[in-house]
Image 1 (cartoon, rainbow, N blue to C red):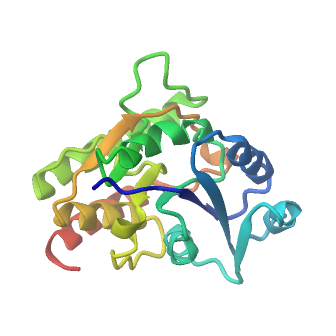
Image 2: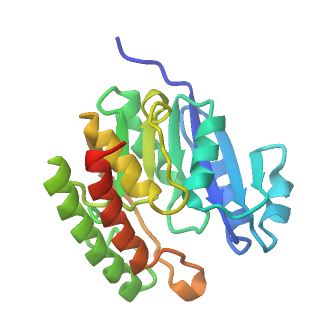
Amino acid sequence: MKKRYKKLSIIIPIYNEDRTVDKLINKVLHAKILLKKEIICIDDGSKDNSVKKLKKFRNKIHLIVHKKNQGKGAAIRTGIKYASGDIIIIQDADLEYEPSEYTKLITPIIKGESYVVYGSRYLSPVGHLKENNHLTFEIHKLGNHGLSLLTTILYGHYITDMETCYKVFDKDIIKKINIKANKFEFEPEVTAKILRQGIKIMELPIKYYSRDFNEGKKITWRDGIMAAWYLIKYRFVN
């Protein structure tokens, strides 16, 4: 019997994003979907005006504030803990991803075609993918190809974009996974633990607006090396 999905929980980890967070929240609020929306914003110890801007939406979002910066993974774990939706999606606050694509990403889960969907930046046809910094995008694309190959070798399942922000889960899947990550290792850990359960990950093409490090991009080549290590680690341990 196909499950009934009524609510989408949108988890937004935030750290020093006062330049974009209000614009992002407005985009999320205006994104048209068939489900009820629950917006959970986790400020991870921001030192700028992120919290001040978020408080302007106090009647429309659920705001949780970490007093100290713990990392993206810790913020997502907090969000998952409080999420009450039937489907859960991760949304970065930096405007690199487009909330108007929620309907496309959650539809396979609603239809019972998949329990987990990733939005891939690398499946989009030329001219559909949009980025404002080609060098940053190409460097990250190369790193992602390496991680995809490693994932295939270790888990027998090819994924084009493991590091994508847009990860969508049936709540019963993600809430049962014991996530330990505090930082960017969330991406390889959750991917590894899903695949180890024999759950296939569906990928769909998404639009992407890449920003550079001088615009606040936080992930570096060191995170790519750590991602490879965690893929190997969680192939053998929980």
